[in-house]
Image (cartoon, rainbow, N blue to C red; front, side, top):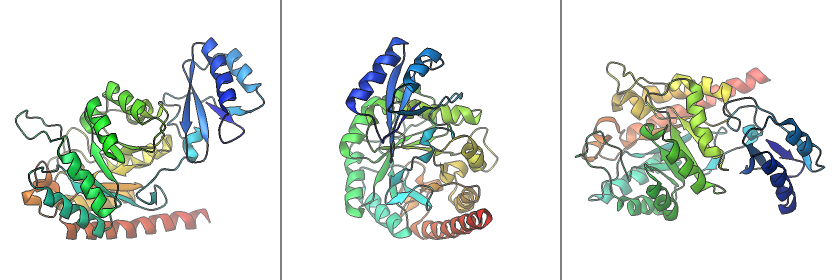
Length: 350
Protein backbone atom coordinates (compact mmCIF):
# COMPACT_ATOMS: atom_id res chain seq x y z
CA UNK A 1 0.00 0.00 0.00
CA UNK A 2 1.59 3.25 -1.20
CA UNK A 3 1.12 6.44 0.81
CA UNK A 4 2.09 9.63 -1.04
CA UNK A 5 3.49 12.72 0.67
CA UNK A 6 0.56 14.79 -0.66
CA UNK A 7 -3.17 14.08 -0.47
CA UNK A 8 -3.06 12.34 -3.85
CA UNK A 9 -0.68 11.63 -6.71
CA UNK A 10 -0.61 13.64 -9.91
CA UNK A 11 -1.51 11.88 -13.15
CA UNK A 12 2.18 11.69 -14.07
CA UNK A 13 3.16 10.22 -10.69
CA UNK A 14 0.37 7.65 -10.88
CA UNK A 15 1.52 6.67 -14.37
CA UNK A 16 5.07 6.20 -13.10
CA UNK A 17 4.19 3.91 -10.18
CA UNK A 18 1.74 1.99 -12.39
CA UNK A 19 4.53 1.33 -14.89
CA UNK A 20 6.81 0.06 -12.12
CA UNK A 21 4.32 -2.38 -10.56
CA UNK A 22 3.20 -3.62 -13.99
CA UNK A 23 6.75 -4.88 -14.60
CA UNK A 24 6.24 -7.22 -11.64
CA UNK A 25 2.77 -8.46 -12.62
CA UNK A 26 0.88 -6.16 -10.24
CA UNK A 27 -1.50 -3.24 -10.69
CA UNK A 28 -2.44 -0.12 -8.75
CA UNK A 29 -5.89 0.49 -7.26
CA UNK A 30 -6.49 4.01 -5.88
CA UNK A 31 -8.63 4.06 -2.71
CA UNK A 32 -10.19 7.49 -2.31
CA UNK A 33 -10.62 8.27 1.38
CA UNK A 34 -12.18 11.28 3.04
CA UNK A 35 -8.86 13.05 3.62
CA UNK A 36 -6.38 11.39 1.26
CA UNK A 37 -6.05 8.82 -1.49
CA UNK A 38 -3.92 5.74 -0.92
CA UNK A 39 -2.74 3.35 -3.60
CA UNK A 40 -3.11 -0.37 -3.08
CA UNK A 41 -0.73 -2.72 -4.86
CA UNK A 42 -2.90 -5.53 -6.18
CA UNK A 43 -0.87 -8.69 -6.69
CA UNK A 44 2.16 -10.19 -4.96
CA UNK A 45 3.67 -7.20 -3.19
CA UNK A 46 6.48 -9.19 -1.59
CA UNK A 47 8.86 -8.42 -4.48
CA UNK A 48 11.58 -6.43 -2.74
CA UNK A 49 13.05 -4.93 -5.91
CA UNK A 50 9.68 -3.43 -6.82
CA UNK A 51 9.19 -2.03 -3.31
CA UNK A 52 12.70 -0.59 -3.23
CA UNK A 53 12.11 1.24 -6.51
CA UNK A 54 8.81 2.64 -5.26
CA UNK A 55 10.25 3.74 -1.92
CA UNK A 56 13.01 5.60 -3.79
CA UNK A 57 10.50 7.96 -5.45
CA UNK A 58 10.63 11.41 -3.87
CA UNK A 59 6.84 11.79 -3.76
CA UNK A 60 6.27 8.52 -1.83
CA UNK A 61 6.03 8.95 1.94
CA UNK A 62 6.10 5.25 2.78
CA UNK A 63 4.88 1.81 1.75
CA UNK A 64 2.88 -0.20 4.27
CA UNK A 65 3.53 -3.92 4.16
CA UNK A 66 0.56 -5.46 5.93
CA UNK A 67 0.84 -9.23 6.17
CA UNK A 68 -2.84 -9.94 6.54
CA UNK A 69 -5.44 -11.75 4.44
CA UNK A 70 -7.37 -8.45 4.28
CA UNK A 71 -4.78 -5.75 3.69
CA UNK A 72 -7.21 -2.87 3.13
CA UNK A 73 -9.70 -3.80 5.84
CA UNK A 74 -6.97 -4.43 8.40
CA UNK A 75 -6.97 -2.08 11.38
CA UNK A 76 -3.28 -1.30 10.68
CA UNK A 77 -4.14 -0.10 7.17
CA UNK A 78 -3.97 3.62 6.45
CA UNK A 79 -7.72 3.41 5.86
CA UNK A 80 -8.05 3.29 9.65
CA UNK A 81 -8.38 7.09 9.49
CA UNK A 82 -11.20 6.90 6.93
CA UNK A 83 -14.61 8.09 8.13
CA UNK A 84 -17.95 7.31 6.54
CA UNK A 85 -20.52 10.09 6.57
CA UNK A 86 -24.12 9.38 5.57
CA UNK A 87 -27.46 10.89 6.49
CA UNK A 88 -25.70 13.77 8.22
CA UNK A 89 -23.92 11.38 10.60
CA UNK A 90 -20.24 10.47 10.71
CA UNK A 91 -20.26 6.84 11.78
CA UNK A 92 -18.45 6.41 15.05
CA UNK A 93 -19.22 9.94 16.26
CA UNK A 94 -22.87 9.32 17.10
CA UNK A 95 -25.26 6.37 16.96
CA UNK A 96 -26.38 5.79 13.37
CA UNK A 97 -29.84 4.29 12.80
CA UNK A 98 -31.36 2.72 9.69
CA UNK A 99 -35.05 1.82 9.90
CA UNK A 100 -37.91 0.89 7.63
CA UNK A 101 -39.87 -1.90 6.03
CA UNK A 102 -38.61 -5.35 5.14
CA UNK A 103 -40.40 -5.28 1.79
CA UNK A 104 -42.06 -2.43 -0.09
CA UNK A 105 -45.57 -3.38 -1.18
CA UNK A 106 -46.00 -1.93 -4.69
CA UNK A 107 -49.79 -2.25 -4.39
CA UNK A 108 -49.93 -0.18 -1.22
CA UNK A 109 -47.19 2.48 -1.45
CA UNK A 110 -48.73 4.65 1.26
CA UNK A 111 -47.64 2.17 3.91
CA UNK A 112 -44.05 2.82 2.91
CA UNK A 113 -44.47 6.60 2.70
CA UNK A 114 -46.09 6.69 6.14
CA UNK A 115 -43.39 4.43 7.57
CA UNK A 116 -40.66 6.60 6.06
CA UNK A 117 -42.11 9.68 7.73
CA UNK A 118 -42.52 7.79 11.01
CA UNK A 119 -38.94 6.48 11.14
CA UNK A 120 -37.64 9.97 10.50
CA UNK A 121 -39.79 11.27 13.34
CA UNK A 122 -38.49 8.44 15.55
CA UNK A 123 -34.90 9.59 15.01
CA UNK A 124 -33.59 7.35 12.22
CA UNK A 125 -30.99 8.72 9.78
CA UNK A 126 -31.61 6.40 6.83
CA UNK A 127 -34.64 4.54 5.46
CA UNK A 128 -34.46 0.88 4.56
CA UNK A 129 -36.89 -0.66 2.08
CA UNK A 130 -36.76 -3.97 0.25
CA UNK A 131 -37.21 -3.70 -3.52
CA UNK A 132 -35.92 -7.18 -4.41
CA UNK A 133 -36.17 -9.99 -1.85
CA UNK A 134 -34.44 -13.37 -1.59
CA UNK A 135 -37.02 -16.01 -0.72
CA UNK A 136 -36.67 -19.66 0.24
CA UNK A 137 -39.95 -20.53 -1.48
CA UNK A 138 -40.06 -19.68 -5.22
CA UNK A 139 -43.79 -18.94 -5.04
CA UNK A 140 -43.60 -16.21 -2.41
CA UNK A 141 -43.33 -12.52 -3.32
CA UNK A 142 -39.85 -11.82 -4.69
CA UNK A 143 -40.10 -8.04 -4.86
CA UNK A 144 -40.90 -5.72 -7.74
CA UNK A 145 -38.72 -3.21 -9.59
CA UNK A 146 -41.68 -0.78 -9.39
CA UNK A 147 -40.91 -0.51 -5.69
CA UNK A 148 -37.68 1.31 -6.55
CA UNK A 149 -39.70 4.38 -7.54
CA UNK A 150 -41.61 4.15 -4.26
CA UNK A 151 -38.35 3.90 -2.32
CA UNK A 152 -36.94 7.02 -3.95
CA UNK A 153 -40.20 8.92 -3.51
CA UNK A 154 -39.98 8.12 0.20
CA UNK A 155 -36.48 9.57 0.17
CA UNK A 156 -37.66 12.74 -1.56
CA UNK A 157 -40.54 13.22 0.87
CA UNK A 158 -38.41 12.82 3.98
CA UNK A 159 -35.03 14.08 2.79
CA UNK A 160 -33.42 10.91 4.15
CA UNK A 161 -31.04 8.65 2.17
CA UNK A 162 -32.12 5.08 1.48
CA UNK A 163 -30.74 1.55 1.73
CA UNK A 164 -31.91 -1.43 -0.31
CA UNK A 165 -30.67 -4.95 -1.00
CA UNK A 166 -29.29 -5.94 -4.40
CA UNK A 167 -29.06 -9.59 -5.40
CA UNK A 168 -27.68 -9.55 -8.93
CA UNK A 169 -25.63 -7.33 -11.20
CA UNK A 170 -28.68 -5.86 -12.98
CA UNK A 171 -30.02 -4.61 -9.63
CA UNK A 172 -26.83 -2.65 -8.94
CA UNK A 173 -27.17 -0.40 -11.99
CA UNK A 174 -30.89 0.14 -11.42
CA UNK A 175 -30.32 1.13 -7.78
CA UNK A 176 -27.39 3.43 -8.52
CA UNK A 177 -29.16 5.12 -11.43
CA UNK A 178 -32.16 5.75 -9.19
CA UNK A 179 -29.98 7.42 -6.55
CA UNK A 180 -29.84 4.79 -3.81
CA UNK A 181 -27.24 5.81 -1.20
CA UNK A 182 -26.57 2.41 0.37
CA UNK A 183 -26.46 -0.97 -1.36
CA UNK A 184 -27.18 -3.84 0.99
CA UNK A 185 -25.63 -7.27 0.47
CA UNK A 186 -27.83 -9.81 2.24
CA UNK A 187 -26.70 -12.81 4.27
CA UNK A 188 -27.36 -15.21 1.38
CA UNK A 189 -24.99 -13.26 -0.88
CA UNK A 190 -22.27 -12.41 1.63
CA UNK A 191 -19.99 -15.00 0.00
CA UNK A 192 -21.21 -14.42 -3.56
CA UNK A 193 -17.81 -13.24 -4.77
CA UNK A 194 -18.88 -12.38 -8.35
CA UNK A 195 -21.61 -10.11 -6.91
CA UNK A 196 -19.16 -8.52 -4.45
CA UNK A 197 -16.73 -7.83 -7.30
CA UNK A 198 -19.54 -6.38 -9.44
CA UNK A 199 -20.56 -4.03 -6.63
CA UNK A 200 -16.95 -3.00 -6.12
CA UNK A 201 -16.50 -2.19 -9.80
CA UNK A 202 -19.82 -0.32 -10.00
CA UNK A 203 -19.20 1.94 -7.00
CA UNK A 204 -15.51 2.64 -7.52
CA UNK A 205 -14.87 6.36 -6.95
CA UNK A 206 -18.49 6.92 -5.82
CA UNK A 207 -19.76 7.91 -2.39
CA UNK A 208 -22.07 4.90 -2.30
CA UNK A 209 -22.13 2.97 0.97
CA UNK A 210 -22.27 -0.83 1.10
CA UNK A 211 -23.97 -2.51 4.06
CA UNK A 212 -22.52 -6.02 4.09
CA UNK A 213 -24.47 -8.49 6.19
CA UNK A 214 -22.79 -11.46 7.80
CA UNK A 215 -23.62 -14.76 6.12
CA UNK A 216 -25.69 -17.18 8.17
CA UNK A 217 -23.09 -19.93 7.86
CA UNK A 218 -19.92 -17.84 7.98
CA UNK A 219 -17.21 -19.22 10.22
CA UNK A 220 -14.25 -17.16 11.48
CA UNK A 221 -14.48 -13.37 11.74
CA UNK A 222 -11.76 -13.18 9.07
CA UNK A 223 -14.17 -14.69 6.52
CA UNK A 224 -16.59 -11.81 7.05
CA UNK A 225 -13.87 -9.16 6.81
CA UNK A 226 -12.36 -10.80 3.71
CA UNK A 227 -15.75 -10.60 1.98
CA UNK A 228 -15.67 -6.84 2.58
CA UNK A 229 -12.14 -6.73 1.15
CA UNK A 230 -13.55 -7.82 -2.22
CA UNK A 231 -15.58 -4.60 -2.38
CA UNK A 232 -13.01 -2.18 -0.96
CA UNK A 233 -10.29 -3.54 -3.25
CA UNK A 234 -12.01 -1.85 -6.18
CA UNK A 235 -11.53 1.61 -4.68
CA UNK A 236 -14.49 2.50 -2.47
CA UNK A 237 -13.81 2.30 1.30
CA UNK A 238 -17.39 3.09 2.36
CA UNK A 239 -18.08 -0.37 3.75
CA UNK A 240 -20.20 -1.10 6.81
CA UNK A 241 -20.24 -4.53 8.49
CA UNK A 242 -23.62 -5.81 9.65
CA UNK A 243 -23.97 -8.78 12.04
CA UNK A 244 -27.54 -10.11 11.71
CA UNK A 245 -27.62 -13.48 13.42
CA UNK A 246 -26.15 -16.79 12.32
CA UNK A 247 -26.93 -20.49 12.22
CA UNK A 248 -27.69 -22.69 14.03
CA UNK A 249 -30.81 -20.99 15.30
CA UNK A 250 -31.34 -20.49 19.00
CA UNK A 251 -34.67 -21.81 20.30
CA UNK A 252 -37.20 -19.00 20.24
CA UNK A 253 -35.08 -16.74 18.02
CA UNK A 254 -34.96 -16.59 14.24
CA UNK A 255 -31.16 -16.94 14.25
CA UNK A 256 -28.37 -17.07 16.79
CA UNK A 257 -27.86 -13.41 17.76
CA UNK A 258 -24.27 -12.37 17.06
CA UNK A 259 -24.10 -8.77 18.25
CA UNK A 260 -21.33 -9.86 20.62
CA UNK A 261 -18.86 -10.18 17.71
CA UNK A 262 -18.64 -6.36 17.46
CA UNK A 263 -15.57 -6.01 19.71
CA UNK A 264 -13.92 -8.92 17.87
CA UNK A 265 -14.44 -7.11 14.55
CA UNK A 266 -13.10 -3.86 15.98
CA UNK A 267 -9.92 -5.61 17.09
CA UNK A 268 -9.19 -6.56 13.49
CA UNK A 269 -10.71 -3.88 11.25
CA UNK A 270 -11.44 -0.16 11.12
CA UNK A 271 -14.84 -0.65 9.42
CA UNK A 272 -17.96 0.59 11.26
CA UNK A 273 -20.32 -2.05 12.64
CA UNK A 274 -24.09 -1.61 12.31
CA UNK A 275 -26.02 -4.48 13.90
CA UNK A 276 -29.37 -5.78 12.62
CA UNK A 277 -31.32 -6.92 15.73
CA UNK A 278 -34.48 -7.61 13.72
CA UNK A 279 -33.11 -10.55 11.75
CA UNK A 280 -31.02 -11.67 14.71
CA UNK A 281 -34.06 -12.49 16.86
CA UNK A 282 -36.92 -12.42 14.33
CA UNK A 283 -39.63 -11.31 16.74
CA UNK A 284 -40.59 -7.72 17.45
CA UNK A 285 -40.90 -8.38 21.19
CA UNK A 286 -37.18 -9.18 21.47
CA UNK A 287 -35.77 -6.55 19.09
CA UNK A 288 -35.40 -3.63 21.57
CA UNK A 289 -33.31 -5.69 24.02
CA UNK A 290 -31.13 -7.04 21.21
CA UNK A 291 -30.65 -3.49 19.89
CA UNK A 292 -29.50 -2.26 23.31
CA UNK A 293 -27.19 -5.26 23.68
CA UNK A 294 -25.61 -4.37 20.32
CA UNK A 295 -24.90 -0.82 21.49
CA UNK A 296 -23.50 -2.12 24.77
CA UNK A 297 -21.09 -4.31 22.78
CA UNK A 298 -19.88 -1.24 20.88
CA UNK A 299 -21.93 -1.15 17.68
CA UNK A 300 -21.73 2.10 15.68
CA UNK A 301 -25.33 1.79 14.59
CA UNK A 302 -28.51 -0.25 14.25
CA UNK A 303 -30.56 -1.48 11.29
CA UNK A 304 -34.13 -2.05 12.49
CA UNK A 305 -37.25 -3.16 10.67
CA UNK A 306 -40.24 -0.91 11.32
CA UNK A 307 -43.72 -0.48 9.85
CA UNK A 308 -46.65 1.81 10.63
CA UNK A 309 -48.93 -1.23 10.60
CA UNK A 310 -46.85 -4.41 10.84
CA UNK A 311 -49.82 -6.73 10.29
CA UNK A 312 -50.35 -5.12 6.88
CA UNK A 313 -46.72 -5.54 5.89
CA UNK A 314 -45.40 -8.19 3.55
CA UNK A 315 -42.23 -10.22 3.96
CA UNK A 316 -40.97 -10.31 7.56
CA UNK A 317 -42.78 -7.19 8.74
CA UNK A 318 -45.75 -8.88 10.47
CA UNK A 319 -43.39 -10.86 12.72
CA UNK A 320 -40.45 -8.61 13.43
CA UNK A 321 -41.18 -4.98 12.48
CA UNK A 322 -41.45 -2.46 15.32
CA UNK A 323 -44.26 0.05 15.42
CA UNK A 324 -43.14 3.71 15.22
CA UNK A 325 -43.81 4.18 18.94
CA UNK A 326 -41.63 1.24 19.97
CA UNK A 327 -38.97 2.27 17.44
CA UNK A 328 -38.81 5.79 18.87
CA UNK A 329 -38.50 4.36 22.39
CA UNK A 330 -35.75 1.95 21.30
CA UNK A 331 -33.77 4.66 19.51
CA UNK A 332 -34.04 7.00 22.50
CA UNK A 333 -32.78 4.32 24.91
CA UNK A 334 -30.04 3.25 22.49
CA UNK A 335 -28.81 6.85 22.21
CA UNK A 336 -28.73 7.16 26.00
CA UNK A 337 -26.71 3.94 26.25
CA UNK A 338 -24.41 5.15 23.46
CA UNK A 339 -23.78 8.42 25.31
CA UNK A 340 -23.18 6.58 28.59
CA UNK A 341 -20.79 4.11 26.98
CA UNK A 342 -18.83 6.71 25.03
CA UNK A 343 -18.77 9.14 27.92
CA UNK A 344 -17.27 6.38 30.07
CA UNK A 345 -14.67 5.67 27.39
CA UNK A 346 -13.62 9.34 27.32
CA UNK A 347 -13.32 9.43 31.12
CA UNK A 348 -11.18 6.28 31.07
CA UNK A 349 -8.82 7.85 28.51
CA UNK A 350 -8.57 11.03 30.56
